[in-house]
Length: 237
Image 1 (cartoon, rainbow, N blue to C red):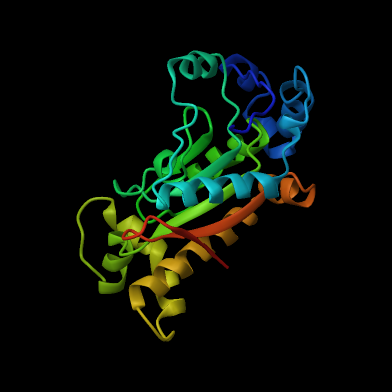
Image 2: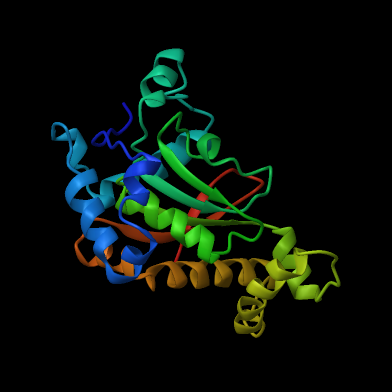
């Protein structure tokens, strides 16, 4: 059985009613918490802890890696259910790599995960804002930053590759992790990947919105490293 959370309805009109200026003063946060996060009906299942949400992710990945997927929440009735509103129990900041689709590797379904994907799994301002929304408004209890083995973006950053267009902005964001891990023993790419995961976790934790939720024990933020060969995700940090 998958995890359920309170129904939350947030229209664009409701959001803009608070105004852009309210974001800077904290009024938006207060308004969202008081008016938009009130559950229609609380239940024990809706009171899941961040630790239990994390365990649900890890259990799902274990099923995937052991070829025992349950494929939950992938029915037409589930599609109809979540069309009315979303209430994901977990958020993922993952790499855009096509080999690491979150719902599959965590054995979850429609409406279970709030997923942000970007090459190198870096926490840009837009990604952070999305994850703030996922936790503050939608009620996600855990954010996992998922990097992976043999990440092409990390490899390119290590090589100092000359790239066209906006690709270079991704590499620049990863370079500090390459530098901080360059003297570590072992595989340079794996070390840089894991250092990058930890750097993005740290960046997310510095968000005023997310740090407040952490202090209130409503959220945890962790790192995970995906093995392309086995499908297993191990904790980082």
